[in-house]
Amino acid sequence: MKTKNNAWLYKKALKVIPGGVNSPVRAFKSVGADPIFIEKAKGAVLTDADDNRYIDYCLSWGPMILGHAHKAVLDQVRKTMTKGTSYGIPTPLETTLAEMIVEAVDSIEKVRLVSSGTEAVMTAIRLARGATGRDKIVKFTGCYHGHVDHLLVQAGSGLTTLGSPSSPGVPADFAKHTILAPYNDLPAVEKLFSEHASTIAAVIIEPVAGNMGVISAEKPFLQGLRTLCDKHASLLIFDEVITGFRLGYCGAQKLTGIPADLTTLGKIIGGGFPIGAVGGRDDIMRHLSPEGSVYQAGTLSGNPVCVAAGIATLTQLKETNPYPHLEAMTLYLCNEISRILKTAGIEHTINRIGSMFTLFFNPGPVTDYDSAVKSDTSRYAAYFRHMLDFGIYLPPSQFEANFLSTAHTQPQIEKTIAAVAKLRI
Image 1 (tube, helix red, strand yellow):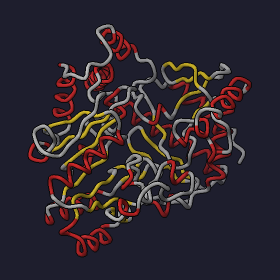
Image 2 (cartoon, rainbow, N blue to C red):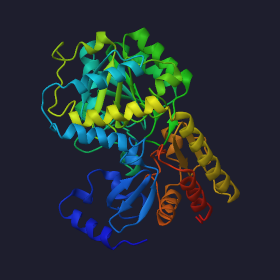
Image 3 (tube, rainbow, N blue to C red):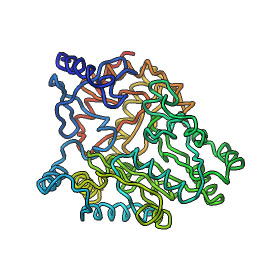
Image 4 (cartoon, helix red, strand yellow):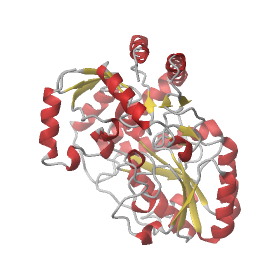
């Protein structure tokens, strides 16, 4: 693998960007490597500055479900850009995307578009507090909801990778309103409600965690959260920034049959462009300004280019229904990886749901943060570097999700399996 240009670009970036990257996990520190710099992408393939090609299982951390540079998406983006790129004034496209989301997600009656998943979560939390008149939020250890100050408490994702449970710069007065509970442990949440019920505005959870590795919430656990929130007039927030339109033409809610009061979305609904959304019941959403008094605003909220890409992506997903094929392809890949590792005597667990999965170097089962962090991160780092050398790009962290797209082909899957078969770690 050639590295000359990548090394030069990294050295150049280090002079003007903290750590040389604009998001921490991209630095490859937890996998013992230096970052690669991408020049272009098409389908399921990335090409870096040294013209190395990689089959991509990170897919920009999930949104590229149709693959990179999908023609239908690019056509709509070009068409929209010729009319202008930002107005700060309503456009018909915003309403179209909102209608598509409302139609797809049964628990959503109104939607507010924002510019990122983090901003969607920030808005959902503020809205929950404003609607209930309460301050405290229950979150789960290992769940990552963006870099919002009061939610950077025992978060997963890059914070787990970097070995830090929270972040300097988050005032204790902010964090004190966040109550932690273990994932998939209903008795623990029941105890919290018995102590704090009158002050809990909301419970926020990833119904399928993607930032301590892929870990699904058990259905009785989610149903228990729904019951507790109903009983104590608290709101249940599903963070589906990753899972929305990834697990089906909706998300985890349709699979579990358990509705949220508020849902945060991102990634796929922007088709590769920066976007987020919070949606929910009308009686809650009407608290948002200008209809209500809970303030939220954003110059680039509902940006026409981002929205156009989202509409094109959701249209493709609705019309083609690729989900059964994606799941079958992902299941085959996971089974083959597991077969090879088992034959080699390498302890592992693969958690998979739909077209997302995580290979933990851990005998398992992996059901929560505590079991996830028992994984052998040194072995994962060696695995990552080995696969990169064979032209396979994986998430540069043990505690992230792998994704498949409609652009992945059977020969690419077989090439990936063949690379795993050569693993010696």
